Image 1: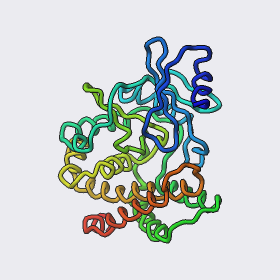
Image 2 (image 1 turned 135 degrees about the horizontal axis):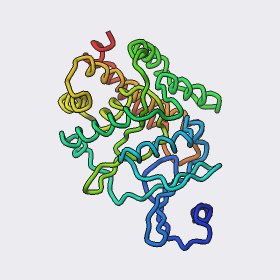
Image 3 (image 1 turned 120 degrees about the horizontal axis):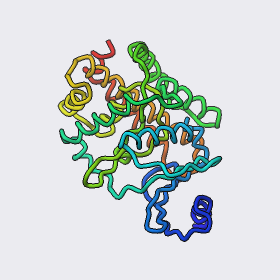
Image 4 (image 1 turned 90 degrees about the horizontal axis):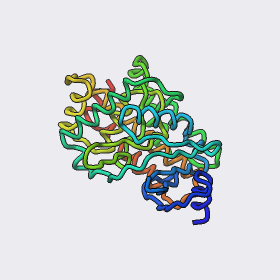
Length: 291
């Protein structure tokens, strides 16, 4: 707890603070800090997160943009050079997966993502096709190993990239795990913008869809809520980018296995996502979309 106390003192020197360690996140330390009746979240960046492609200044800009749109909590402070982020505490809970699949919630998420995608640009980029390559090289450079499945997946990714090369990049979240949503009884918040950057809107849409295990009907409803209409090409693109979402997640596990000192089975995490992207690739709908 000495490190926690030092971190709080670094941000609020000499203040009487009540601190609670929050759960969630694998790579960062999240603290709830109560001072004079006001509650904040202090996010202390984990060690070596730059190796994961995280730029804390980009995270700051994205979090501020989300707050301005009413999608995320207010940014209170940013601590340099550490890159720690302080936001207002949201008194809420991670919604159950079942609720995230309900039509009303899908419409809410679609509107929120459309608003962020249509907002002002943010510094930094997120190109899933380059991210998996960078993760591979980082893992090798740090003495790690890369699964044989990488070459097979990378060949498919190259074919997907050809189809996605013409769409303009927009501000994206790029890490829409269920744990990054909070509901407070009145609204749904999106948090954890550390992988944000200018990227492919369909990576966000597919990332949400696969992380929330949307079946065909729910995926169609989600796309219709986002675009205002249901187009066959959008369903095909979503299927292709579901593959890229899992490919990124698998390679995140690979690079973490090489660089992280945390007590977490990143090899199993990577294997789980390689297996899921293989199942995606074997589906007839994916084959048809890939052409």
